Image (cartoon, rainbow, N blue to C red; front, side, top):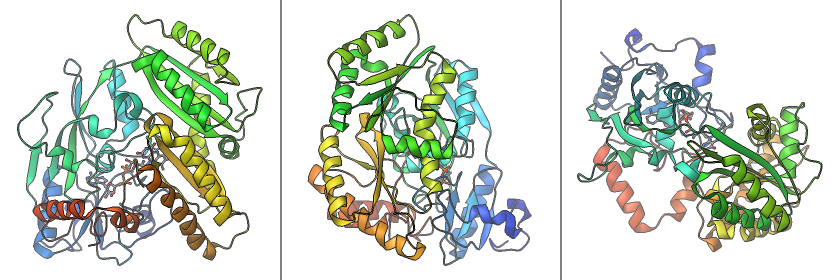
Length: 465
Ligand SMILES: Cc1cc2nc3c(=O)[nH]c(=O)nc-3n(C[C@H](O)[C@H](O)[C@H](O)COP(=O)(O)OP(=O)(O)OC[C@H]3O[C@@H](n4cnc5c(N)ncnc54)[C@H](O)[C@@H]3O)c2cc1C
């Protein structure tokens, strides 16, 4: 059998052009590729068979999860020479072990479904991001996804106990251990986490679970500027200690964008300010979380760190507060093509970094409309830019590239990173390679050659070929 046989019904190929469309692009729809075939295997053995055929015939593959990635990693190459391997049919829960605080699931499981399964067993799977209704755990592992709870629970890297993957020669690596401690040799699973499909195809993962919080306190606070937000964060870490699970900064313009996407959202405070903080603390057990949050808020109001604020009285109110943070992403998308960044700097440098980029953009591209928000507790900022209204579509790519240069240029001074969570894909390849030290480049290329000597796994992502 050839990978390009027209009769590939064993792998559930997509042949209808209308149906194929969603596999050729991803969420932002900035890029569109072409595929030699789109296959949807139903088991790890089928994935292995596809990879074996690809290795024998020298055909490049690109694994695909929920296509919510933001760096064009899962979009097939415009050259049309790649076969898309969608993991969506591998979506079984293999085991939940509440006593071991773990579950083992297939790569195509949707993240929100996994959160629900964990909750059914009175456990928490803490990975949480705006795309959770569509992204798949295999994609989360391949991108080392972050999200709103990194502050307390870490990135996906911290949540994976074991991995099953198909290697580029078609071997199945059975690394699905569910051990919380295992100190035997190299931790090979970590190589797959964040590898963006370049080392093999993840088919299943064992995940770490946590006690399910029974108390959650969500507060929305107005602050005078980013420096006040960072000071507030320091106080929250001290006063709420490990119970703090999310701490987001949002510009006022971000609220307006959220309201453009969801017109029934009402500003939650009497006071308007240039910046707001959305923070959450959660606990299980005997802790008096509500009392703790109240004492913390009284202290920071008295100290003048906070101008105004509200605490959600129930889950529905908390959901509404979170919609400001989540829906602003949709509001940006409605404004059309724009620059998305996910940079990181040390937390202590957030305020100076933002001031530097604001000034740099005003000087270099005064018509740029910045939208800056992000996860303060991780030093991770989405400093995005919308083009001015009326700019011709043809002019936008060069304009946004110039804005990106200003933002990335400021990172060096603060020892920052061009990607805190979205990864490199094809969209950030040039900037990534430029910043890579010779030793890092040589080691990365050596790892890639060891796993994938033919260079057939997701070529052009993370590496030039
Ligand atoms: C509204 C919105 C909000 C977002 N918020 C966040 C956020 O807060 N934090 C964050 O980190 N990201 C965020 N993202 C980005 C995105 O959701 C994540 O990168 C997510 O992990 C991608 O998962 P996916 O299943 O959609 O993967 P895809 O987009 O399908 O693929 C992403 C990459 O992983 C590879 N891949 C996919 N599945 C596999 C597999 N099984 N084996 C090997 N490689 C594979 C692909 O080839 C590609 O390189 C957001 C995206 C959107 C649209």
